[in-house]
Image (cartoon, rainbow, N blue to C red; front, top):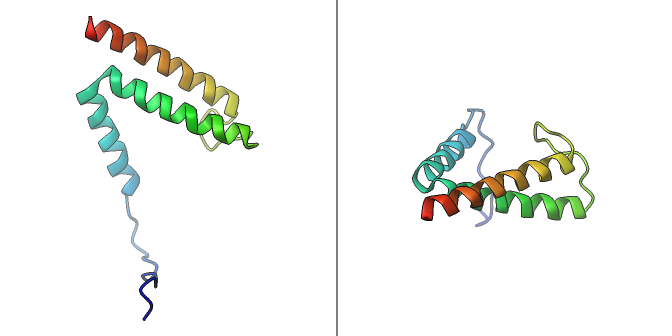
Amino acid sequence: MSRYATEPESTTYDPLRLCVFATIALLGWVLGPVALLGFAALGFAGYWKAWRGGLERSRCVLRDTRLVLTYLAALAVAGAAGTFFWLT
């Protein structure tokens, strides 16, 4: 058997996304506005690259990539302001 053989497809639902969401919520709770700034900047960079690559419609609730970029930019600004006030 090949070392790179894939395992058989499981028919059981794997709620991995729920674990990911819980981990992100934990980081947000622990790190506060710093986490918001980091995740928003990371998301903005990813969507910016995708938009530059031609993505016009996202699976995000906002659908339009430009709206998603605006939303993420607003979150980054809020995170930066929160971080500033948190540190001062």
